[in-house]
Every structure is written in C-alpha cells, then in structure tokens.
Image (cartoon, rainbow, N blue to C red; front, side, top):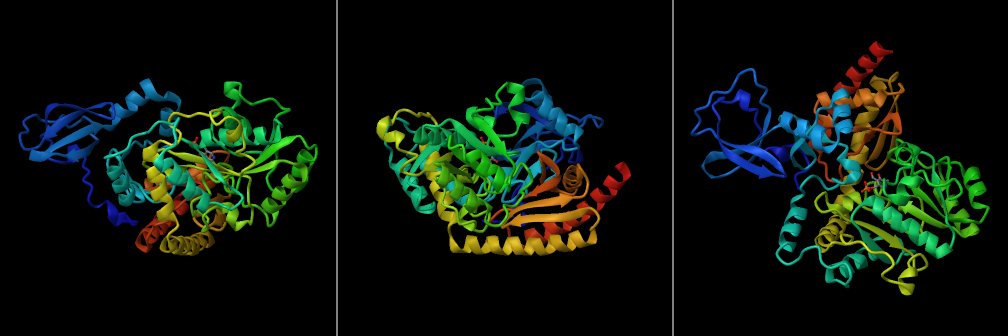
Amino acid sequence: MKGGISGTSDFYFKNSKSSSGNLTEIGTKSYLGLKMAINTQQHSTKQQNPHEKQKTLLIGKGGNDVSYFIEKEAVLDKSIKYWNPGKTIQWQKDGVDLVMGKREGYTFFDLDGKQLMDVHLNGGTYNLGHRNPEIISTLTEAMKDFDIGNHHFPSLVRAQLAEALNKATPDSLKYSILSSGGGEAIDVALKCARYATKRTKIISIENGYHGHTGLAVSVGNERYSKLFLSNGNEKDFVQVPFNDLEAMEQALSKEDAACVIIETIPATYGFPLPEEGYLAAVKKLCEKYGSLYIADEVQTGLMRTGEMWGIDVYGVKPDILVTSKGLSGGIYPIAATVVSEQAGKWMMEDGFAHISTFGGAELGCIVAMKVLEITQRDEVKQNVRFVSSYIREGLEKIKSENADFFVGIRQLGVVMGLEFNHPEGAKFVMQSLYENGVWAIYSMLNPRILQFKPGLLCDKAYCDELLNRVEASVKSASAACKITN
Ligand SMILES: Cc1ncc(COP(=O)(O)O)c(C=O)c1O
C-alpha cells in the first residue's frame, strides 16, 4: 500500500487551459451520470476560448490518447440544481469549492487538479486509504462469483464475516446483524436493546452523533432532528452531559432505560476524551440498573485508537458494538451491529423481525473480511503507534510556536482533535489547510475543534509533508482570526 503522497504519481491531472488548448470534442460519454466530453489532443482543431474557465479532470486515458473530461463548474451547477443546493452553496461560502476527483492512498485531487492530503477520511471510512489496492483486488476477484446475495438466506460469506466479527470483538458479543450504513446499524442496536429489556427509554450523550436514520437521529443533537420533527419524545429520549457520572446515574437509576449509547470518543462534538474510569463506570451503572451499554465504534473502531476498538482501551465489554465506515474499506458500504446473546435473543423468537435487503450484501461481506484481516496485522498496529507519536510530536512543536491560538490536542491513537482559541478557530484552520493542500474538517458541533484523522498506513514522508503544511496553515489561520476579531 502506498501510504504517502508519492502514491499519487500514477494519476494524470491537467488543466486543459494550460495545455495546448486545442481539444476536439469527438463525442460524449456518460460517467457516473455525468455527460463528459471525450477529447483527443491528437486530432484537435477547435480553439479554446481563452476567457472560458476550463478546469477539468482527466478521468481516464483510453487507446489513441483519448481522454474524458468533466468540467467542475458543470458538476457544481448540477449539484445545485439536482442534488443539494444548501450544502453545495455553503461550501462555496466557506471557501471550500471541492469536487472530489482522482484519489489514492491518503491523497485525493479536486476536479481542478488541486492535490489534497486527506486527514478527514470521512470519519475513518478511508482508514486504509483511498482505493487500497488489496481491497480493490479482493472486490474485483469477488465480483467474478458474487453479487449482493439474497438477504433471506444464510450465506457463505455472511456466516464467515459474522464469525470474523465475533473473533475480532470483545467476548461479551456473539451475533452480527449486518446493515449497509452506520445509522441503520445504530437503529438495529437500539431496537435490540429495547427488545432485550422491554424498556423504551434510551439515554445518550448531549452533542453525540449516531447518524440520521429513524432512531439514531433522535438520540443525537437536535440540530439534525428538529427540522424533520424527529426529536423523539422526551420520555423516551434522554440526554446527559459526557463525562458526568452523576447525571448518568440519575438517569439510569429510574430503572426504566433500555440502554445507554455512547460514542467512545464523541467525534462530531470534537473528540473530548473520556475521563479516567468514566466509560467503565457507565458500564457498571448499566449492569446495576438493568440497562444495556451500546458502544458506537463507527469512528473509533478498527484500530484507530491503537487498539482494535476504542472501548478496549477503556476496559469496557459492551452489550452491543456498532461498526461501519472503515469496515467498508471505502469501497463497499457495510456496517455491523455485534450483539450479546441477550441482545440478539429476538432472532430465536422471530429471525425475520428485522430485514434489510442490502444489509450484509455479499460483496460487502468479502470486503469487510479483508478489512478486518488487514487491520489486525501486527505491522498495522505498529504503524498506528508510529503515526500517532510522530504526528503528536510535530503538532506539539507547532502548538508551542502558536501558543496563543493552538491551545490543545485531544488524542487517542490517530483519533485527534486540535483545539483553537477562537469560537470558530477550526473553520479558519480548515480553510487555510485547504489552501495549503490538506483536507481536514471542523467539528460540526464544536467549531473550535478541528477533526484531524490520519490513516492507519501513513508513512513517514507523508507525515512530514502533512506537518509542514499544517505548520504553515496554523500560522496563517491564526493571523486571519486576529484580523476578524
Ligand atoms: C459515531 C458515528 N456513528 C454513526 C454514524 C452514522 O453513520 P452513517 O453516516 O453511515 O449512517 C456516524 C457517521 O458519521 C458516526 O460518526
């Protein structure tokens, strides 16, 4: 696996205006639903209008030097017209006019050719890098024999993945219920807890984030539920502050809660770290009051903390563990709710009670097994240790040089939140990083904190280049913040 930015050299990007400018459109080709001009420089006759903005991506190179181009502006126009106007326009306002183009390893390109080092990784989806060659070849091989499969029947690869997940998770867990995304898997977890306890109340953490599906959206921040009149009723959805054991005990002690659901390190809230003993104490309280403990490991799982699961670091054996994002290898969507015997008992009563056509798609299962295998290799664990400590060292230096602005580093393994001394400091840093060729995103529920999430397989050269770019970006963001203050 090419972890460093050198891994992108195979890709060929260009801005057609800066080339010969003599491109001939010889037809159109549909790619991902977009009409692209197919151009050839060999037979070019048409003169480009020099005033026309022609930022394009060379998607592929066929025989006879035929290349396929997409204009970025066309993508943005279509996105506003047909996809999501609010989101597209907001990113433009935030100075991030990104449309993802080619990608590999921990780097991707904007359609206009701008190179970006990826330390967002979609929350860990690209934990093993973009288009990891081992994952790609596993999927390619699998496509010779498999498809999504039929979700009603037992399947060779679903059974194998369930066994692999059983072995890879704490011994408190037994069955795997497979889904196609994190929110769906969280909904399954909450349903299992309600079944097992015959209680409906769910306790979650203020500013937690568990996705946007039916139950998941109701246990998260109301920013995402209110708009859709989906906050959930106050009796069934109770929230307490993170790291507040007293509040947790108060909520649990009524002995009417099905479960507590907690992200091991709340990502969208900016990675506040659990205080020593907090998560283990919450688990104990759950046992005391007859509630289940659900560990949302969608972002903290799969070796990102230096252990297979974040909860392993904190010595918690949950009743239910949810994993997604990285389990897909960034290639085939899949998620799993791994449950204890008790939480999975409904399957004995009515195994058809929860159904998902794409949940546990067979191609996804094969990819997920490969992800689990790569993730658990000794050398990968060692590399996570290297990346965590090497980047920490570099960040500490940058922090000391910008002590009035860069005020904190929240870190467990390659899960990192960088704290800035300005209410929107991380937004400034995000913009500045973007200008300097790094993609990292601020925490939506705490814009002081930048989510900084390097991958498991980064090499030293990549880390060095990343730190150089961060150093320059923090300096200029600090200056920009001072101007706007
Ligand atoms: C901690 C956590 N849980 C659940 C989810 C929901 O996953 P999905 O977006 O795949 O539904 C996310 C997504 O970002 C997440 O970060």
